[in-house]
Length: 88
Image 1 (cartoon, rainbow, N blue to C red):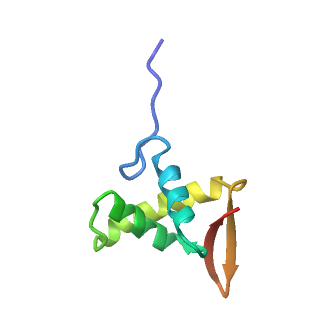
Image 2: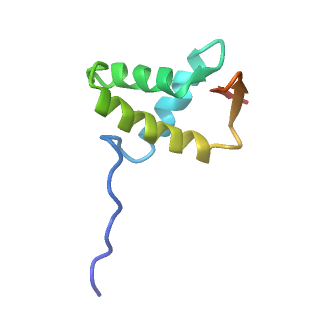
């Protein structure tokens, strides 16, 4: 039996870490947060430089995918064309 291939790891997150950090970031926010704000918060928590635009884009994309999969617990709020996220 050949070994199964595992998927590519997303921007330095351990399995489930992105979702945990995103939930924690939203829990600490009194108002809805944008994906960029969450990405910068996660990057600071992981001691990554927030000035690296390419890395921030990758983290932001990973977080956005996680947020879109969490439909039961996280609400998507769109105001004037800006998408924010909030815990239900």
